[in-house]
Image (tube, rainbow, N blue to C red; front, side):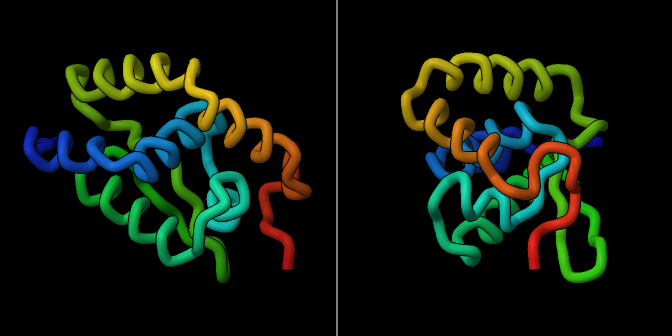
Length: 118
């Protein structure tokens, strides 16, 4: 997979997109509704951020009925994977990301239940 450097760094320059990336890296496959709840943002904001990350080649998605699930792209080049993993690692000390992760872990749909609540 080819990833444009300018698109990659543009995608990583937004705090909401970084927080989305952090949740995906820490939790695997995540539904948009879980990101909305964990980050306390609107659904359009979450969808737009995830769309930008997908366009940059950082995440992939799959549809299951009405729900769209996102995860880190499995075919990122090594140099991109290194940037993403290092960025996520450094974000782990952020109070914002710690709070996001705590809210994510408390969601009703977790753990084990991969379907979003109705």
